[in-house]
Length: 176
Image (cartoon, rainbow, N blue to C red; front, side, top):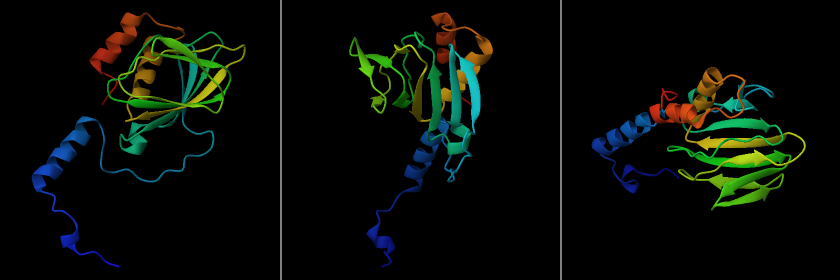
């Protein structure tokens, strides 16, 4: 059954222009296409003592989302941090992970999903004896660029001085 134009509310050119500007400000483009990356595809970064494999990034998704896998060695994890623009979903796939929120450490078992809305402070750490693996989705995309910049500026360092990574976050230099 075809719908007539009268069945949809009219959208003014001004409203569309505002939406487009908001999307562009956040790095989103209206052009996003279905993707089927090859298994094992993406690119690897070594940052904060972790191996990060970026499966989907901002360029591929039009800024809508990013998806990466983090492999974290035992006893390692990022310092307390938060994102200003991105919500994050964590799916623990392997190992023992603890996340800090509400001022308490919470053990997260494999198969569990954790949602961290912006600007929740959320360090995590591998609490086991083997590396942990998490699939992480950033909604909106952009934080994967922070990983790339930190990998360049702090090579081989497990936990760089907070001032250095905080400087990058403040500058937002990692967002094009």
